[in-house]
Length: 344
Image 1 (cartoon, one colour):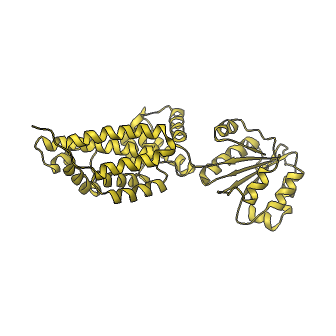
Image 2: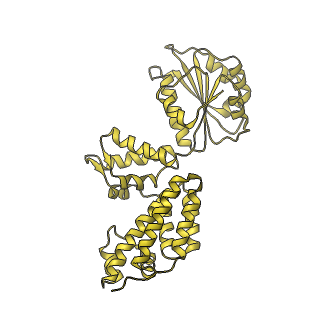
Image 3: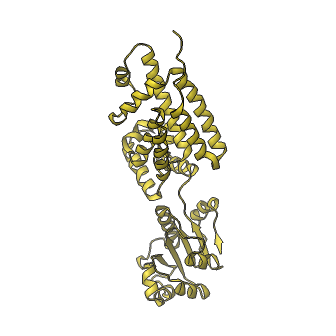
């Protein structure tokens, strides 16, 4: 068995070694499973023979074990490798697969797509125990993976993306690779004809549940609602938003509040400074913005910015503690006092 490490997968997909007759691709990110299976199938059967790729359901093989063997032994109409693409279901087809692994075909490759498999799952155990199988795990993209994917996608189209736009975009994608690809394609189409993508472009195109979850986190913390902030943070984590992205969003939010607070300190009403603010405050968020500006002085907001900057650095340096660091930073803001205002 060869189980590719995460750092080896991209190099393998760029030039797949198809010597092993069985490749198992599994994991909770089904979009990434599908994308990697597509790449391997394309490498094995570049498209000349439409009959070279045979789709099969795992449950079909379980009911008729001989079907997998027959398809793998069939010679392609135009020669070349024959690809059997199997989508695992709820029933075990290990008997048929074990027979194939014991006497592998010379001109066929079996690509199996599966969801999350426990370490002791029969399909995973069988493939990991065979020298004839290659195993690729597919987990949700890390922040670094997403940054690379974003930069590679727009570099290919000759479009630059501003760092602020890139950071915001990374916080809104990543739960599923196919969904991520779709969002990036949508953004690229929106920005076609332009030489760069801005934060406004991202806000105009990418607006999903992740964005709303992130807004709820920062709004609750700044408004002095620690319990609501913790609930919103838990939802953000479940949506796949990284701790570093939460801290970054909080930094931008506090900086925005600081600008509003300075306007109020200069004698303008909160309503007036919010009306003139950029970016424009959505009506859904206005009440919490007002509470945040009222409860924190400009000095307190500056101290919070410094504290968040330190938290951002600590989260990058201690990835295993990033969630705890983000939670502590948010609670410090939500429970903190207003601080002293500058003397006139």
